[in-house]
Length: 82
Image 1: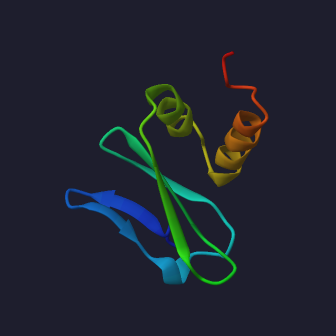
Image 2: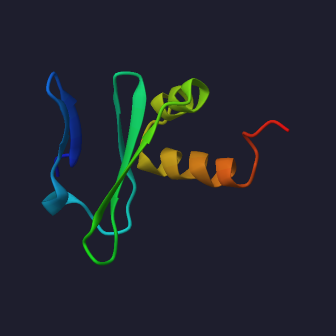
């Protein structure tokens, strides 16, 4: 299956018909991370992250499972400085 989120010179492209519900997808565009998921009601949600350190960590994720693990750790404060 083709990955449902991609980038080209014109911007970010979405194929929501190829997205699984409640699965997180991502791409990098112009030094920003774009996070996308389709919820249980088939509404597409998109978030843009500009924080350079976090964008770099997202770039280093090998797959969507690594991405989800990164955000689980982030939410637990493992990547936050006091």
